[in-house]
Amino acid sequence: MPLIVHKYGGSSVADGDKIKNVARRIAKARDEGNQVVVVVSAMGDTTDELFRLAYEISAHPDDRELDVLLSTGEVVSSTLLAMALGTSGYKAVSLTGAQAGIQTDSSYSRARILCVDAERIVSELKEGNVVIVAGFQGVTQNMDTTTLGRGGSDTTAVALAAALKADECHIYTDVEGVYTADPRLVPDAVKLDKVSYEEMLELASYGARVIHPRAVELGGLYDVPILVAASFSEKPGTIIAKEASMEVRNKVRGIAHDTNVAKITVIGVPDQPGIAMNIFEPLTRANISVDTIVQNASIEGITDLTFTVARNELVKAMSIVEPVAKSIGARECTANSCLAKVSIVGTGMENAPGYAARMFRALYGENINIQLITTSEIRITCIINEDRVGDSVRALHKIFELDAT
Ligand code: ADP
Ligand code: ASP
Ligand code: MG
Image (cartoon, rainbow, N blue to C red; front, side, top):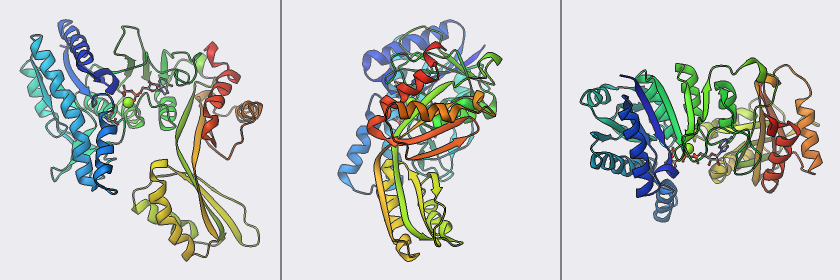
């Protein structure tokens, strides 16, 4: 019997009626002769609400307690979905991440899956159950609950599909697939039929939140084709799989944007060995990811160092960098939290000149100032003021003719 994994995001299980709709979709998959494992996110904005509560109680919630709290959202939706299926006459059982055998490291709030011990899931499937797994969570060797990072239920789904060697992995959400840009920002955005893991990983890492980057990474690693489609329609969706077809190679495939960006500049740093190490090592120890790093050419032995962090980590990052900057004799430290990244992505850009110039022309055409630029082989990212993000994404979508994809 084919085994399929379905994942339903928060908006797809936001209320009782939506949970019943999901139950109907699962019942249909079961009637069609499949074994079904389902991964669910927390209902609607539950995770945001749990965060809000935690910060109402404490300015610095304990990492371990916070992860247990956040994991409860997915437990609620998984149990309700099991009840909905049971009421319709389908055998179903809900499992927490720990019960489902999802073992992680102990980096709270961004834990990585180390392995999946799928024994319990397999035995529940043998019993004829639909197995509903609470997404976004796992357990350490010491049996402490962890969470996988915001949006991490996608990663749960792909990890389970890989571990169970599922025939299909479907991510159901509130849009009909992966588009050339966020359809909420660009009304002309076009749904892609197929996108490669490589391109999707860059798009997702740079803000296209329709799928979590680690889910894409796992899909590529274990060769799990992933279907992204809507939970509210039967339209075909987008397949994320190995290299897309030849004809689309020579193109920008999509535009991503991310508004969770803050920039720190350390001004007047002595240009000598060990300075970068002194600044970045304490950030790493504090589990803060640093993204774009730019160091100016030095003038008379003095330089400036700029880098970006997630906006919600700015205060913590500044509290670490400011004393370090002082101790190494830097002049001052400044921060800007009203920034955004806009990125163009496409394997067609590899070894082909002209894409950067076209991108800069589009932004110039909108009078948008570029503050920092970074690139990979298949991506160019500009950091700009957040209030121009919509204009820039639309201008880039137009100049790269993505409405004609
Ligand atoms: P879920 O709750 O189902 O996990 P998310 O809110 O995490 O859903 O992701 C879906 C959202 O991703 C869409 O509503 C859309 O606004 C956004 N999005 C951003 N970029 C893209 C893109 N390129 N294609 C489709 N959706 C995108
Ligand atoms: N509920 C979690 C979040 O809001 C995980 C997820 O939805 O994938 O980030
Ligand atoms: Mg999501």
